[in-house]
Length: 330
Image 1 (tube, rainbow, N blue to C red):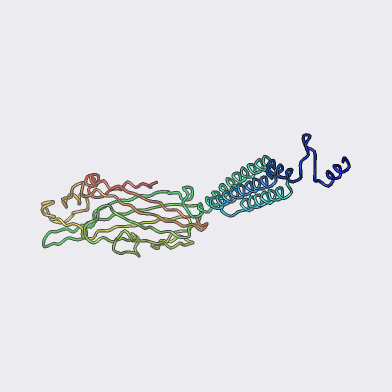
Image 2 (cartoon, rainbow, N blue to C red):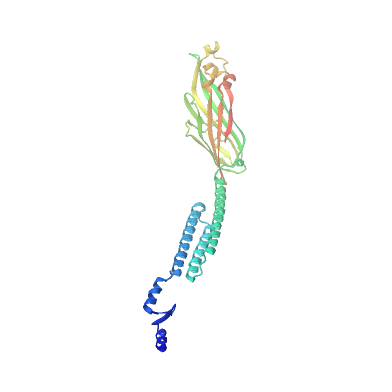
């Protein structure tokens, strides 16, 4: 009997458990009840989720890098580092050597490096943009205003002997003297504007002559750059300029000389002309503005905005001739 039982055990039909004989069928059912989960499969799924997370983080960071700093050496370097890291995670998973803590530590380090190189790229981009803009925008060291001034005056144009009527024109002149170490490429005056319009037909011209047209805020006076100094209108030396503009209101006012002076028109000069016309201080209050645009041979550009306040009371006190307080607006 013992020989038969041993034989059955060898072929797997019987085995002893807790002192009892069990058939293979019962033993198989017991195995189903106590079967443990497949940890290898679950671990593989978990490891793959780490790969997906770091792939997403890396993609978002590199997209942010591209938007903020653009394409540069540091961008491609970090792109290569992220690609290497994701390849390494895949390799570890395939070899069963994946370690979550080690992977997270390396991932944080690469993310930190990405932020550092993103900052470096932003600084470099700012420097290059700044250097480029410095070539094309103004710099206070690139223009030295030696002097700028303006004046307003009333000039007696002609007298009608029959009616003893004197015709008066109003002149507003602005002069700019300057020197710059960098030669000019182009110089122009534009956006000439009086806050209150002068009466009559107003012309914009250069006192030396050669340019005159009806005044509007859209007028542009473009000066020609010359190598040697000359007195021709609308020319400027390469690094030194004397620029003048003139607003002239022809035949702006008239007044009766007999009523004004109680005398003949002989010997009447321009002094107190505004008073003779009967203007009040507020009638003469005004603001003169214009832009001086300069482009240098180096590529730099500068725009200087000039503002002059016309004080009517001072003009009445000085008899119709006086300086305008000019300033360079910041």
